[in-house]
Length: 271
Image (cartoon, rainbow, N blue to C red; front, side):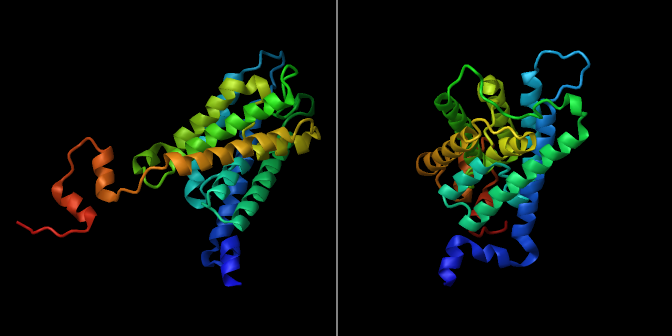
């Protein structure tokens, strides 16, 4: 029974210091901020409507993700996206119970963010409150393909910069993930609204009551995220070389010999 609970991750709920609950709060807050600030960039309060500024939207979503990952990544891993969580579940990086709870609080956080945005926006200017929708020129299978690739590039980036055997990537991890989100919006926002995040679309859809083709925003990114995570794990993951070999591999500056030996666990004689 104990082995079964450990496999599912039920033991996470009883750990001391409330680690899982802090992580769930971080995921809730992260998606709340994403839906408020990201979707707010889609709202226009200007008296005379101007052309849709997709660059503004892309940068806002990207910067929000950058900030959230930088601020909360150490608490929960800052998934802030069911597609990312699904990828981590598929590769065994998190356990089932934790993954399910993550997805639930991500959706609740997105809903809270969209609800706050609606409450703070004049009724006549709310529009779609950042709701994602398909272009009239794109079919549902095409939309699934677009969202699949959005989820794929995002999770591939997450896996690459969070690879424990690539410590040199850690300092720019938050920026790289934010840039992946920006890339997705710049490229295909006219196709599907560039969701790449089922929770983000869920929050806006529930608040506006518009569910047309909503399933696309779950199926596409999650399949893309799972595919990226599995491909990275089995084909691209950096090998575990040990601390000395990592320094040698990624550092162009000649390291001090004593420091290298210290990292390797060997002793050196003092002069």
